[in-house]
Length: 129
Image (cartoon, rainbow, N blue to C red; front, side, top):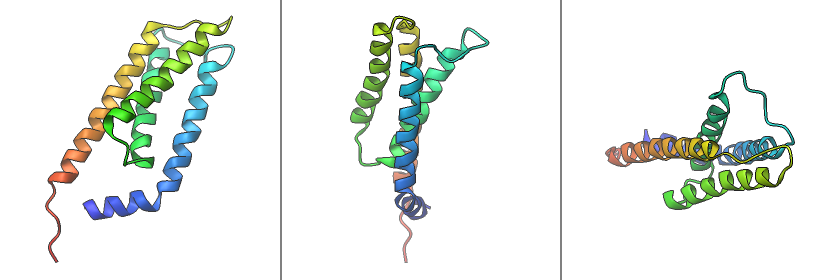
């Protein structure tokens, strides 16, 4: 199973990288656009933040598996902080600590999922031929 997953990740590495940068560009565009995306519920914006950073974290693992966990955490934190910084400079947007907390939750869940996956893969016994 481990070898199959490694082959698939290597085979689709370019697609994972394209998906990562496309999602990153979409998130940056939405975060820096003059008006925020519409929300029907008060918690929905936090879901956007947590879900976006979670998806970026998992995609970053698929696209760049050689990144260390701490580098991935710092990079994703900086992405979220950059969006909030730009929002503080925009006249129609405002930064929100709740957004930063939602980003942190999405990042934490993504890193935990990656850690569990990595642990399970490493614990598998190699196939003896």
